[in-house]
Length: 623
Image (cartoon, rainbow, N blue to C red; front, side):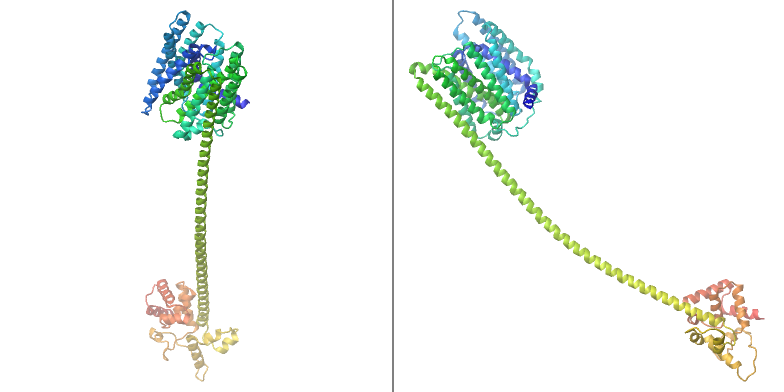
């Protein structure tokens, strides 16, 4: 209940200027033309005046039906101000005529027509200001307006007619002061769609261009308006005066019905403003007929239900006008004119027709039968149309959902196919990646094996060079007269080394010299190297190269003098003996390039430039 109250208060704070404005206009109309509901109405001066007004509105409606132009706001404001001025003047004039005992009836009727037309245009203005509002706000607006207006009319019914007319004129002028606040609050009427209820806005939103729906609504409202007109003058068309009790019952009953409909609307009940309200109007009309039949001499009892029915019909007419204003493509005044003609025009026609027909027939049974048939037709036509509209919307929604489901299924299938294609592509890419990995692993293994093989070859080569160098160095540093027997007795035998040393050319030469010395010839000292020519040909028999300790000491002394390395001393020894660079490389198991490098370093360290310089130096060193 707290939520309902907060919803009512929050919306009333938004549309209060429009609410006060339309309450002022309707209250002034009831006071000026309807006699403050001291009776159901005044006949010719009420429904007759409304009939003339609706006839003029019908002409304007036919003219406006040919155009879809919208009235500018400036024109609407001028029209509203003019309507207020005319209505205020008519109210003062009617108050003056009421004070006159012999007022012309034609003048009173004319003023009633002008007042009804002007105040109707004022109400059009306030309904127009409810544009772009939601269905809940619109329902609260119209039912609150009628509830407040009923209470004001009931309070004014206890005052004299002159006071009522003066107060009516004041209420009319008050509308001008509400123009500014209404313009400010109009921007706050943001549309909030009804989430659950099936309101008239729901059908107007989707069926505005449906001729069958519009025709059904027009027929339903027209039939109810016709029934209302008959019942307001039941059974002979004359006004039905209220007693104090029935006037109070009418006021309380109207307020209760309006409040109940507001509460149901705020609580978002299903179909409150479509099927529910038409059933309520049908029940009120049927109840009024029952009361008229049950109390044939107290028509005011049935008139209570009739006037409550009139309040609900008028409020619902305002609600429908706001719905058409929201979703139609014409000027709001166009829909207001149409609502007035359908609702109040048919009511006025029925009332005037009853005044002319009943004196001729006087048949109450016929009247009751006609009213019952109209009630049935109005309700059934509208209810059936609402049900059909709901069915169409349900079918449309079902089709939309099925189409949406089909679209989603197609999208899901497409996504599934795409996923399968992606999986296949991923598997293919994975297979390619595995194959590339295998190839890379194989290439890496082959490359690593090649590097290992190269490293092994390099180690083997280095080992071979080291063994060869060791053999050459031992051969070079050995003493004169060494022999295989002496070497075997003086030093332990190294497997494989003896054979390598025996095969060395220098050792073979030494062995031949030792063999010569150990023969029968007398032992003699080896001649020293006296000239370069004596060392020029080591491989010839006449070379006679002496590798005695003295010669070795000369080479060692030269190496120590010029800071030669052991390897350079070995190269210098062989080079001084006349070996070529290639032969030196072969004997020492090094590359020719390495032998060449050693020779260049020897030249550089000794400051010499040729083999001859080396031989001359050694000869000079011997001398």
